[in-house]
Length: 371
Ligand code: KG4
Ligand code: ZN
Image (cartoon, protein in one colour):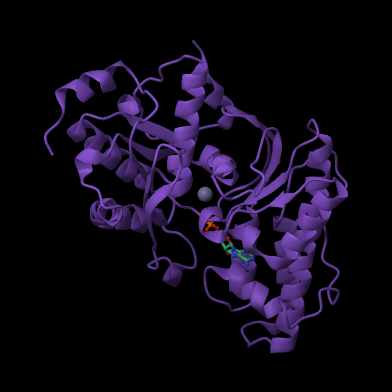
């Protein structure tokens, strides 16, 4: 891999729209992922490893995640480049999630990306992980008719729960978010209380199919309240109270199923109410978009489809592999940002000097385009 001197000089001046394949890296939580995208956004190769070592702890352990990224990433990147039929010097740029997220994993992914970019004499693009989720539904082929701004995004995963007005590249308005647990976190904690494995969301949904969603009248926190903030901790406590009489004894399955179904319904009702409020907080969106692992939930999807239909817009949920953490969305966000900079006649700075950020508010993303 001999650095190309011309490219090295070009990279130091700033980032131009890549003229060839781009390698993207995701390592902000417990997925180690790489993808290669063409300049048009065609996915040439993608690989993801969902770290399994966390299951025994019932949640993501940051230090274990960071060590796993360190162990897995170099080989995964090499195999992804090979799967695309390329050699490293074919790459024209490297992008990585550089925040927000778990700092250990971000340091591993961003530094690996920067090191490779420097070795190749190519630019490095630091991608905001939430921005990547926000733009993932614009990937070619996801929305049948394409997806134009502004759209309403509901991001619901193990770490995030928020509504965003996505008004343009770099223009994101947070309409509201959770004041305690993220939706997926609530699913995982309740699943654990019901004796299910981790991650709990899919297992809780499966158990809920056997139960009655009306069996328990759980609270609907913040329902009807102005704005679109979310809260799930009261709901979790209400469920814990129902379990008290059982102490350490195993729950009858029918009861566990009723609890799961009633909890899931309460979460869906809360999200429905909050999303309806979000619609009123922005100029009419072109679509309702969902992203994040919880967007896989069937009851929630049905709910969101209903809300979108009531507003006369499509409901768009990218396929699950793009909803959960992945590197394709990271590469796509990098391309979108480069394209926007080019459209404005700007040269973005090469991000090799940017430090990984555990917090990186979306409100700062417009700064990329300030002249
Ligand atoms: O986006 P994701 O893969 O990872 C991050 O958290 O970044 O989301 C994982 C979360 C977990 O909390 C998992 O329990 C939840 O999404 N989840 C679900 C379902 N599938 C995954 N929650 C409810 N119903 C599901 N079917
Ligand atoms: Zn994520």
